[in-house]
Length: 453
Image 1: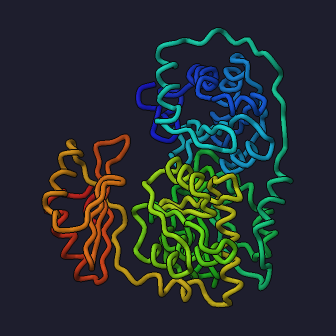
Image 2 (image 1 turned 30 degrees about the vertical axis):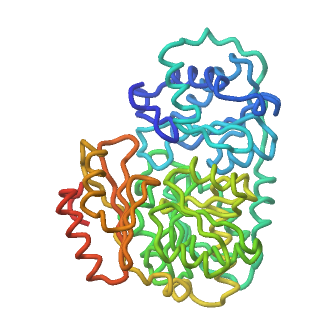
Image 3 (image 1 turned 120 degrees about the vertical axis):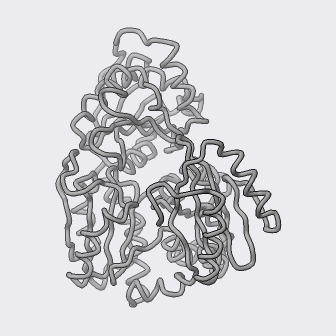
């Protein structure tokens, strides 16, 4: 079990690190992290699973644990992670658990945990406590207190998603790569958006025979880019394994940074919610902050991680937020992430503008920027102190790692939650400034993991 309890989920190799026995224990101890308000929803927990071969067995063992602890189980079967979030709120349940390893390779599996209204459970808000209980308190033998209930939320979910669709014309040609993952379930919904669909790798297959279901890796987007270019598509969309993230490709086949998708959508969201706060993560481009402000919104920076983003959005009533990793959050969706709602909102903007996506994005692509670059650093805190000393003449904050801002460039270096890594993002107003600043930082941080990027 060592190392399977992560910052935002439970995840490990099956069955060497995570097996049915552990799944049962996680289910049994899940009750310990529910509060009175959660349990007032009836003590029922939504359980669902992805297409991995081990997922039905792990979900069954997890359910036994929940039942033995005196909770009810509402099993919705094969589902995307956003469908699990939706079911928690729609059915008024006390929480939910999705069995999935998200974008990880086929050998992995895991759990994503939520409380009422899809409130996420992180290491700080419950995963750490479950880890301690699993290690210290073996659960009793299975003694289910109630039968498993089954529910089908697909029709309600379809209605929920289509409520965000504001324009159905013109018909658009869109390439969609689901990487044999759970977004396969979205085919009929995607066609209901009035799309000429160019489907790539539809069909559930937890072995991921075509490519890894991680759209953040450039090599996993090449098939999509080719399909967009060769097919003359208006855009392309790549989903990850459990379909909670979406990465976009424009009509010219260029990858669109998720921070620029946030910037693109913010004015449309703010047209419905004037003056509202819009939340974005600390790695996002200056263009994101500026687009929110220009549309009359309040730009709100937040640290990386869905639990932080969602908590801040709930606290301030934000209608929309976006992360660089491709997660987009909506107040009208229980503050949870939804890749599919994001596709709808991008289509709304495209149809209302009547212009190509690349043209709409061109003004937002005004700042040269690096991708996230990893560095192996054992003493992460020490390195952050050194960076603060070396760049003491900049404006410094420590919201998530260290961010240093100058008039013509900025950078963020933040620690990985699980590995001896620091992650760098750097942006500047000019390419020459970017390269000069990057050289300074690499001289301090060392050689990037995986070579130069």
